[in-house]
Length: 147
Image (tube, rainbow, N blue to C red; front, side, top):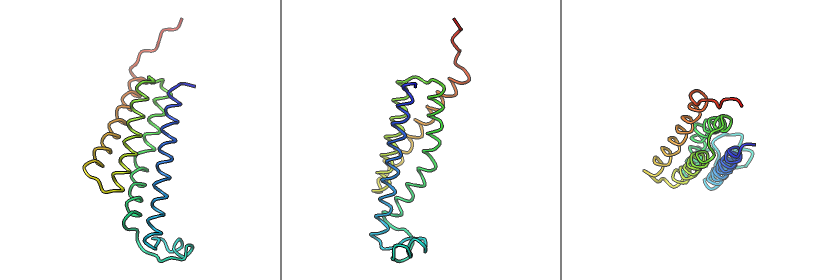
């Protein structure tokens, strides 16, 4: 197993845990507000049906943003691993993306601009750089000559 795979798995685990903590915060926000946006959920928990506000709304927006960004990174970074990208750059790029996404969620939950945008852009540029490595390794790197 390439060492970059372990780095990828660490990013995967951290992002997985981040998303689940965010989901728990959304539930906490809904319970604190005393309502769920879908009638079947409100009925099941015996509370009112009402649209998300406050923490529940922000956590929901974080969740949506994660779904728009994290799966693409996981595919691109896995392609990086499979293409044999350098270990050092995997540590840097996967680490920057993961840390920036965690910070983005924290900034979103506490309404912190321009830091939320800075975190988003940092993760985005780390993802683009990872894609650049993949493209280079797959299409432009010269293969070592046999024997």
